[in-house]
Image (cartoon, rainbow, N blue to C red; front, side, top):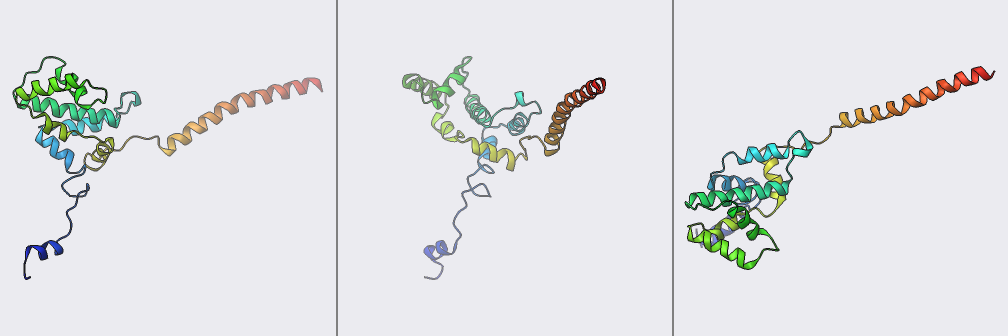
Length: 184
């Protein structure tokens, strides 16, 4: 059995399927999709939306997952030369991803897109299904860190709170001293 395929298989390491250099995982999957759908700037845009300094302006991981999926659908439609009417892709995305989608509406959207040359099955199979995948991608590939309140900021807030409580107490003790001084 010198050099047989079975022997080679036994001596080869198993293929990696996690994010550390294999065929799958956020380090490979999302960059591959970004390239496939020509979405060059979307990674940095997602990172900036996730780490926005104003908490009220931050996007959730789920928001970013839907944003990427919608962008892939839109790119596939444009690449196929489809000219969807306003709101058609948004409505179609909801039909493809919602558990409450109307089956007839979903099939109608799929048929319209496929008639225009969009391979909906392929696009749908590319959709990111897990917010954890987005999280890993943002941290591992984009180098984004979700902003958290630093220990120093928390300590300063606690100190300010204690000082605010301390001031009225100090004033009360001064008033008490004045009162006691008058009574004597």
